[in-house]
Structure formats: C-alpha cells, structure tokens
View 1 (cartoon, rainbow, N blue to C red):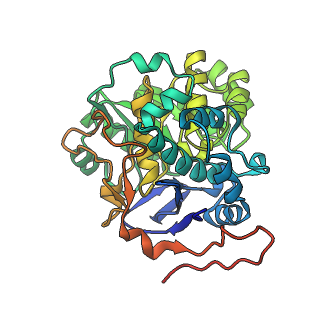
View 2 (view 1 turned 120 degrees about the horizontal axis):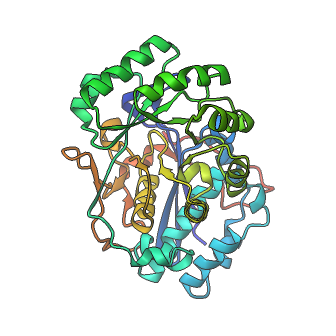
Amino acid sequence: MTPPEVYLVRQPMANPFVHGAHQRHTSDSVVLSWTLGAFTGIGECAPRRYVTSEDCESVLTQLRSLDFAHLAKALASGDPVDRGRALYEHGLPFEASENLGNNTQCVVEMAVLDSLAQQAGLPLSTYLLHITEAVATARRTVPAHINITQVLDLSQPVQAFLEQRKPLRSLKLKLAGDPHANQQRLETIRALAPPLALYVDPNMSWSAEQLHGSARQFHALGVALFEEPLPPGSLEDYRQARLKHGVAIMLDESVTSASSLARAWQHQALDAVNLRIAKCGGLLASARMIEQCHAWGLPVYLGVQVAEVGPLIAAHRALLTAYEGFIGVEAGQHDRFFHTDLLEPMPAIDRDHNAIHLPVPTRTGLGCRLTSHVQPYHCATGVDRHPNESLHMERAR
C-alpha cells in the first residue's frame, strides 16, 4: 500500500475575511493525496472549532490513528460503483469510523471517492448519481452556469463591494456588533441594489431579544432570512421566533449531520439550511442531507468554508452538477484569497457575470490534481505506521 500524503495548509490570504466573531488571514485546511493502485485521489477538509469542535490538529491526530492498509484492502476488489454504493449506505469501513470527526471523515472519503470515480471512468458528479439515491436528478438538464451568492464581510464598504462583485440575485451580509452600522449597510444595499434577495448572518452573536427586536426593522428592508443568529442550542428560541414573530431562520452551525438536521426539522426551528461539505462529514453525508431536504420541501443553501484551497472547491462543483434547487450557492474564492493555486485545473469563477460555469465534465473523478505549490505544507504524519507506534509529525520546511 502507498501511504497517504498529508498537507497542513495554512496559506496566507491576499485579502482577509472579517465578521463579528473572527478575522481570517490564512487558510486552515488539511489536504490528503492517496494512491490506490493506478489512481490517485485527493481530498480536503476545512475544520472550524466553533462549528464541529474540530481543528486541523485534531484531524491530523485522527488520521494518524487510522488503519489505511485495512481501508485499501477493503477497497481493492469489486466493481467501483458497488464499492461507492457501500460507502453511501454504510460509510468508511474503519472499525472506529463512528468516532471520526466530520472533517476527518470528509478528507478521507473525498480522496476515496475521487479514486473510485477514476476507476469507474466517470466524472465525480456522474459517479455520485450512480451511487446515491438521486436517480431522478440524473434526468435534469444541467444549467450552463449558476449565479453566485456573494458574502459581504466587514472588511469592505458596501458600494465598492457591489461594484467589484456584481451580485445579481442574492447577497449574504455579515453583521457587525453595532446595530446602527448594520442598519446603514442594509439601507445602502437596498438603495444601490434593490432587487437582491438579502440574507443576514450575525454569526450566533445575538440574544433572542435582539432577534425579535430586529425582525420588523430588517423585514422592512427586505431581509429574507436570518442565518444562525443565536448561540448554539437555541432550537426552542428559533421555533418561537418563527411561530410567534414571523422570523425566517436559516440554520448553519446547528446542522452538521442527518440527526441534527432531523432534530431541527422536528422542532420547527428552521425555514432553510446552509449545508457545507466539510462540516456535514463529506460528500456522501451532504448528498443524503440534500436528498432529505428535498423530500421535506426544505430549501437548501449550498455554502462553502471561507478559504477552501482546492479539492473542496472541486467537490462543491460536483454537488452542483449532481443536484439542483438551491436557494443560494456560494463559491470558493481562491482567486481573491490566494496568489498561488494548489490545484490544476482550479475550478474557475466568471467574475464578469458573477457565475460558476458548469461545463459537461470530461475528466474522471474530481478532474484535477495537486500542484507543486502544496509541497511546502507537507506533513510527516506516520499514517503508514501501526497506530500504537510512536509517531513524528512536523511541518516540512
């Protein structure tokens, strides 16, 4: 077995991303490359402690403990589509897979799916349709492009952002701690771009009283959804806000699994949900959750993690090609955040039309490979050793 190559990617950002709870100046991803036979699959996760209680160090620790030789053996025989269906139904064949963090699950599963799709001779989006329950989706006509929901953080003035990003249909606004500043920014957006659907994101910083007090004022400015405004564990407050105050809620950090999605739905705590591949535990968990939302009639917003560096961006495009009906779609902003690309070809964004193009995929798997720019982030994790052996890990310099 060829052991996986692992990279701890903290790539400096050309432009920071700022919201009320955090400022991000570097990426924070774990990237994995694993050769299975003649095919090399790649994966990425972008753990955030405030979302899933994971960080890159916890992912690296879990990767050290995994028996990749056992996984390679389990994946070595049989039809690649059948193996993909087994992954969809049962998950990764690790003894301790139930205890894996969502981001660890994501990065390993993505590399495996990339490799299996290559073995099957299929683009990853087509492969997903073969192994999941999205059979009806395969009959749809994939649009030539999808408009991006831009996210206005606190680092940019409204007018400059609108002129540069050119949002056409929807916009998400990160809110500050100053209510007056939020009001001014919303009024400026409405004056300059009246048709936009507006979503606001206080990043779990409000109280229930603040939410109720802001609802009428924000509704008058055309705010369609409040994204996760309250602290974690506020499902009852969300239910009350929806049923008593008419506030439309989009959950994000509260939904990281099929069980948490079902819990929020049963509690009547949401009008929409923001799903992101890494926080949900990977492509297959995300696919299952999208399918469940479609069955319920619950709107889905397909988000991204700020500063994704490559494989997650490509995986996001595969979901966009396989599924439809999203109320908003974000996109990895690699061209704005980074001076060098870690992926070739890097999925592009049409800045002139604020869109993601979805050409008919011609390459198998994710359709891309890591570039040499990833090498400075290589980690010696010892994942090829027995879990009980002492391990050494250091950032390659």
